[in-house]
Image (cartoon, rainbow, N blue to C red):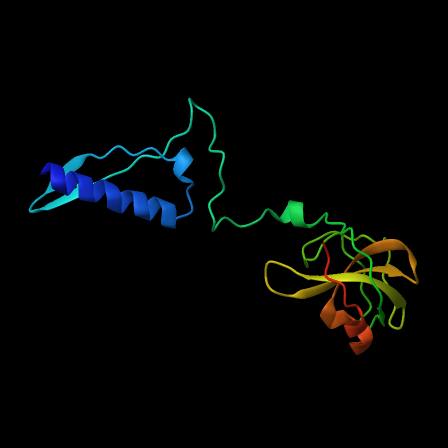
Length: 156
């Protein structure tokens, strides 16, 4: 492979690594020429210092379920809603999160709204309290009355 082809291959690899979300500071490139008949293939290696794990997260890596199941937002706004399906509050905005209320909320239970957020799946969830007091937790928008639209503060 000529030096021009090697340089072009290195530039193409660098662009592909950046497009994949790898920070330039943590990527090092070593190009090797492999003859595949008439085609030449260049490869790249990504490394960090020593034997350490990379200090970056790929842009397409899913968030860990456990991390999102223990979110307590700092914002408290106006609004409220009523429970339309007997269900419990969850520790985070996801169906796989644990029971935060310790018991099943009955249909008609009034909830004080703090804020709302969208989870990784794009579903709207509300962070609420029961009657303005503990317990606090998350409830899916499909399990509350339409007056939940009075909860207008986005969770931060």
